[in-house]
Amino acid sequence: METKILRVVRQGEAFGVQSAKSESGTIQKCNIVLRELGGSKFENEYVCAMLGNLAACRFYEGDIVCATLRFSTHEYQNQVFQEILVTDIVKLNK
Image 1 (cartoon, rainbow, N blue to C red):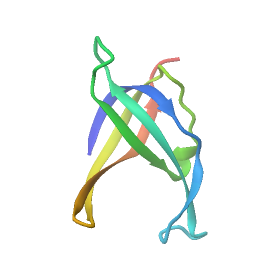
Image 2: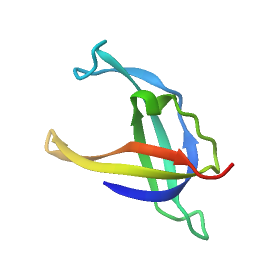
Image 3: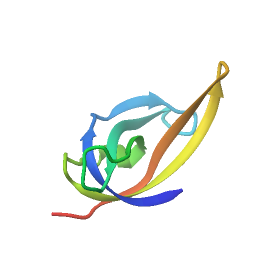
Image 4: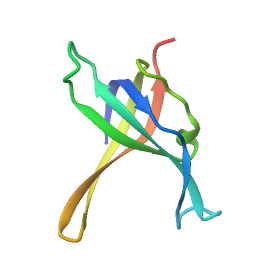
């Protein structure tokens, strides 16, 4: 896991997905795009998923956040995919 200070680029709407780990069988998920701070728009960007209660949190373009990201990979049909999950996120500016 890695904790970073990032800028919010955009956030999608929350939607339900199936989850075997949830009592109800579904869990809320939303995607968020976060960019490293720097002097240009060409800084590294991360497309991340937020699950459960975090998916209900709303952030807006330009918000500065402190986020803990968990990076994982999995293989599917001989291709490797990377997933980035936000495990904690806090808005820093007002």
